[in-house]
Image 1: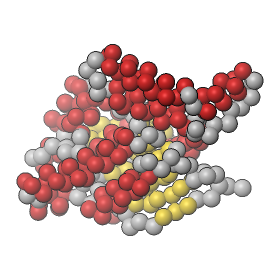
Image 2: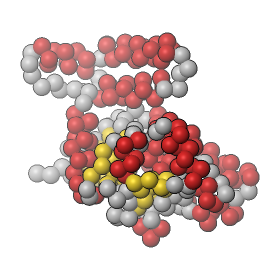
Image 3: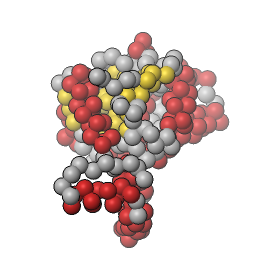
Image 4: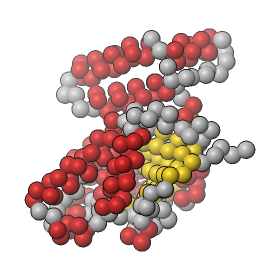
Amino acid sequence: MASPTITTTYQKVIYERKGANGEALWLTLNNEAMRNALDDTMQRELLDILEKVAFDYSIRCVVIGGVGEKAFCSGGDIRAFQSMSLVSGYEYLLQRGARIHQLITTMEKPVIAAVAGMCFAGGLELALMCDFIYATENATFGLLEINLGILAGWGGTVRLPRAIPAARAKEMIYRGEAIKASEAQQWGLVNRVFPSRAEMYQALEKTVEELAAKPPLALRAAKTIINNSATCDSIDAALAIERGTIQWLAGSEDMKEGVAAFVEKRKPSFKGR
């Protein structure tokens, strides 16, 4: 029997809890008429969801995708820029983009972007916040803001040069260039590319199932170590983060269970304790 799906109603984001214990959260941007653009309603709903689930450890993995084949997310609602002042524009960047980034990167669970079609501007910035990206062959990626006389304001000009070679990122940003999924994969921006959206989601279901079966504390610790050590100027400081976090794991029931299961040649039963 298939596991039940728990759906919560939002206007611009489809929220689904899947798995035997609702351990997988699938979020789908739902604004197909605007190619899943991040309008005000969608931003508010996404923030509300992320605030609620960030420290909900019953959720083991999050997938963010978009409705339809044409767009993961085409960016922000350009019309909103016309009414922004210097002050309101700054608050928009801080309270929306910066807060969404903080929630996605600090929540101790994997977040995967599932990209089909356009992944432009704010859409690419959202994907860059995730731990890794799966994409379809028709996916295209770009920070196009320079064509409007502005630049990406949700971290794109900072994160893209860290995700791919800096010279490649500069060319994309300076030219307002969009690249195909195959090129994005060659550059290391995308993890895996699939012929169709259906095949991508089949692979995602397997990946989510695998991640949900891993020891919860170790998975949480892995993301914490990688993200926190990446900002360290000193390798010694980064290694200290690793040592301290592993010491935290060493006293866990999960570690004892994993070692015992290995010695006894049986499947471990991890509890997240």
